[in-house]
Amino acid sequence: VSPKSSHFSHLLPKGPPSLYILWIILTMTRKSKQPGGHNPLTYHEQKRLKSSGYGTQSTRLTTDSQLPFGHCCLSLSPAISDSRSGASGASGGGGVVATPSGHIYSREAIVQYLLTKNGEVKKQKAEYDRKRLAIEDRRVEWEEKIRQQAENLFSRKDQGAMVVRKEDLSPAKLSGGTKTDEKKKTSENSLKTTSYWLASSQPQREVKASGEFDYEKEINALPPPPPERPASPMSGNPLKLKQLIPLKLVREEEDDKKARGADPGRVLCSVSGKVITTQAVVAIRSSGQVMLKSVYDELAKPTMTCPVTGKKFKEKDVVELQKSSSGFAASGQVIATKYNPTLT
Image (cartoon, rainbow, N blue to C red; front, side):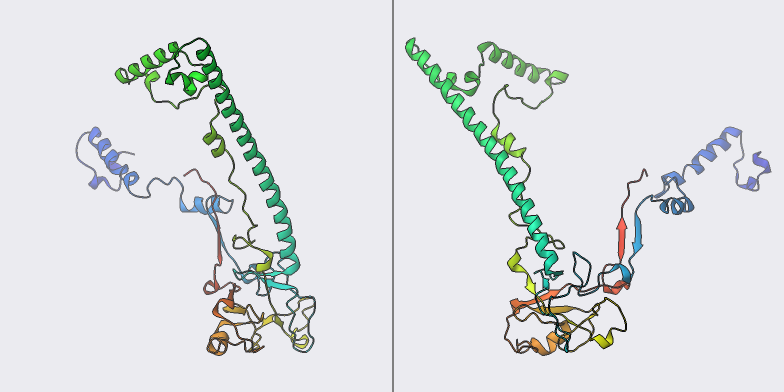
């Protein structure tokens, strides 16, 4: 298209065609120098590629994706005790436990998990000890070899009525080093000082003589030692079986289930009887009672007495349980993201 036939001909510079080409170069390359001008994909292309798994994927979690309160964090099913009372709907503490981090588990599931993980930790520790013992054995053999060589050298010098110099007892001498090697090394060091631009004069990692034992290198090559105790499934903190806290969950009556089938019903506050959904919840370690935090602050905290059993408790006996979430943003984390590597 001729410059004169363009609708923007009044904006073009007057002059030869070379000036017109220079004007195009100066104006059209400006966008690439601005922030964000390097992205080769348009908005519609990015939207179409994201649907096929390109870039960071994010989705909003609904209420069905959240774990309801009173469900086991391992089996994802309602935590039910072995024995339940009929009138009050309170469940005994035999089958429902909580960890110090506030996560609820079925006793059967968490005990099976701890037994399995304890077996794995024992195997990892035995393998680590075996590798460490092998390194220690090689170290003892190497030290014994150095000592034997030093004794042989001393005996040979002593029988020949020769004076043993201190440098003859160095590890380099004992491992077979000669004066020729020392002279060669000295000349190489002087060459590195004067001709530092040569490729052969560049600094390199020192390689020890063949057969020499490097204790620090062997120890650093070992994997990290296994933990003393298995980690909690949710929090990752070390967990013991005796740290599990028995809970007494109060669930809805049979008449309030509204034909839910096998669903045992929602968990209720043991004091107020309100349904626990996404509210803050606490448990008293000594009695195992579960109640809303607002009820605890109003009734139990001022007297430090359990409203259900009447037992005294201390501040350290109060465990804040992990509350459930819903599809609303105010209830907790409702956005899940996954990063996929891209080329841009």
